[in-house]
Length: 481
Picture 1 (cartoon, rainbow, N blue to C red):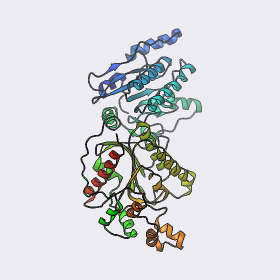
Picture 2: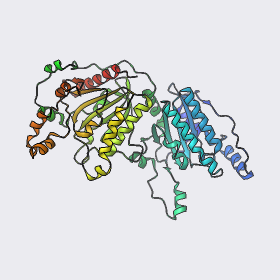
Picture 3: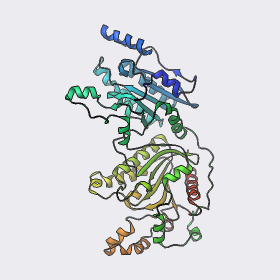
Picture 4: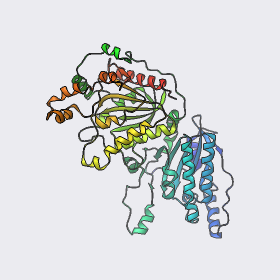
């Protein structure tokens, strides 16, 4: 287990030197019993603070942030009515001043000495946070050991980006309470930061010592303005049908064959070559995680954006793109809209999962909901057809304002082999079906589906840089921040 950080230690660790400004005023606990008053005095003496939370503002590498910090040494970080009021006041002030909000929790939950009146204040905290998010302001959460009960079930679980410190106990019901109520121990390893991260509930496990860097990278995308692009396209972008004659003339099946080569660059290479300050959002935040889709905050050639990309290196017959991957994609789509960030989708899939479990997991509904979510966005959007564009899984991320395709990319309602089986009875007519269905990028441009094509010239690095330059160029045209 890592060391237990106190609230004031975190201020010194995470914020810029001398930047902390407290927002707290003396608390009024109201009329309390003598026993509880004694507990409050003892807690203040032990912890050095007057309540279980302290709030204020500071800077993280020069950027202003509002901060809410739990102090576990004050009655186990529990939230009573005074603490809840302090949190609500800080959140509302952050919203009014247009500040990103960073919270770091360490709490056993609602303060039992105050009971139901304190318990229901979690609703007020949550309401204030949702108003903050509705104002398109970032909310970041760092869960410390332990974070349980009403804190985890309210303001600890409402962030855009949620991380926890290594080994932290994080859960709804504390294990001691569970054991007392059920006369059996809670299974070990379930309520740990690492396990919740593996199940897509947390985005990452991050020690307090690394929190400054994480917040810095996140705010570089969420707050900072674009910078001048650095990448230069290796070949002129084809934006008119007349320009298709300058591309290599291949039949449809040859395009498909080239798109399927294992060494072909994918979304990971795009982020490596052109992305900076990248922060991954892992999982749905609702208990699912599928590596077939990558969701990331990044600065793509200097342009802040959210990337939602199908990862060709993580899709196979043994691990197809399932419903959870599309739910992750929808999380990224919602994220972009909520924070006013441009969205880039990357389409590169042999198709969505076809299985009983996928059907029971609502694969068709998730495709529909991705299409619907993209159709209602107000932020700038660009879809990149990078390689294989097969079936509903590809269609789920295609509905952007502008669609950029690579020269050998393609889009079809089924893999050509599957279309051949439906139309001709076996897969031997796949090449013929690919031609008949007009699946290559050039045909997609002629049909008005694709708006620009990136010629595939040079080595993999040059090609990837050209793709990024084309996407960023389109984003800037449609009004990227």
